[in-house]
Image (cartoon, rainbow, N blue to C red):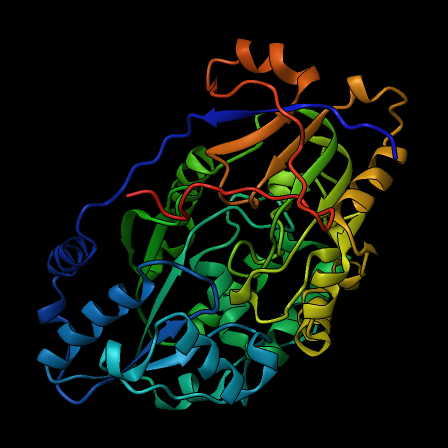
Length: 426
């Protein structure tokens, strides 16, 4: 087996603003909105609950539910996650439970169903479908979601309030119908076509946009009124992009990713980080340029959903054994990305997979191999890079080299071993 380059540890300086008191800020936003004068006793108010691992979403929902109940309203939670949770009502409730969103914690019942109702038609003649319980039971609707760059497209509005309305609230059938339009017309045509139809058909009250830092901590909260859902999200997306973690190098021969999963990114591994995008309705990403990607494992939180594993060239048999094909298939098909569910070449040993990646990297001399090793595409404050990148790292204003050169550590079984910093830094 050929030798591999030595590596060194890097500390990447990324802006990490953090909101000190989420509950206090949410209450202040509701006061500024004048909530007490806009709710009538007995009103049934739907709160959207998505499938993303948003750290403080349960707290935000709890504050809103408590304030509504204090005014005599009857809030209820609706799973709004498209096809996630295996595209079943029970699966979506279970997914919320894993995210800490329960009736007991939030203080509002969960009303879950995969039934949808048509609320309008697009100019393309396709139906716009929305959760039937929202349509029939809600006097008002409050949308809560994180605002962040999307994994499949680049636009003025990406993943956030408006995508939750169009995709999440559409359940499996509505998400599938909306995504179908993106194959021929792209997200930049589909979203502004479908969103106004839903906005006009349903009684939206307000929305709360959550921006997170690189540690999944809440950086800021923002309340938007329906007339400002679209324009108000634009600057929030720009802010989210400013503080999102990225790889500090533009070209790499091999990227090693320790773990992937839905709790890391909706795409398993964030294409904004890897530069890998296989979506017919969007142009390919131009950077970074990574020749080979080796992903080593799935997170427990993804529960076998391995969407995005197709972005990798190599993986391990232990990852493949953890794949639950049912949710992976549903998520891949609903998102119009069957390529994302393809299983890469798998090896029993990390050393074998890394050797294969080197053999296919186009680099002949291991002393010239540009290798980067990260925990996942979300946590990149600390990363490892190979010796040919040392001078570049030392010259980078946002990088600090914090170790000497060492061999890539392998255990007796031939697998890479590394202790990363804690997931959330307090």
